[in-house]
Length: 206
Image (tube, rainbow, N blue to C red):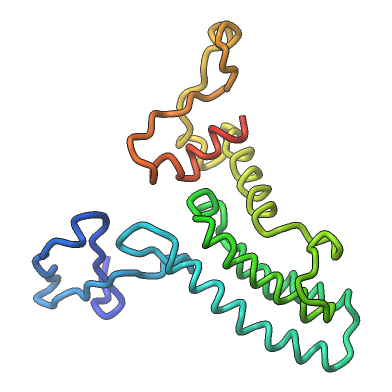
């Protein structure tokens, strides 16, 4: 494989990122070391938190609110404005959400929800409007539904992610257990692992 040095970045993850590291060299050229990078439009940083990703999607979605304002001034109906929001703005806030939904902090959740509140304010002209009045579920609820759908597909043996699940419990043993989960939940030594997609799904959706 030919490696494009200009497009190749190095990132040191976890506690090791705080320690001095020797520069990585490829073909006698140093590789740029970064603190965050975008992988398939998902921003990953060296502390393995979602601060940078949340900031990126909120910034991108907030810029599109300007076009929502222009459409409002042009006289589009509330239904058309809502459709624009769902298609062009909300889709940005939900991209690849099963990957990061379970690891969000309360502050990050509120920051994402604030974008939807601003959009509703533009669409309806009413500040601090209750989301249920527009029949729009919270973004947190929608992320949870999408995460459930991904996990449900994973339980199908032909799914490409099925191998990530732990071995299923024997039916005979399962009937004797107080915990009737079909898949055992692996022990998590760290909070980061415990809040990862797979463990969150195994705890929540069985």
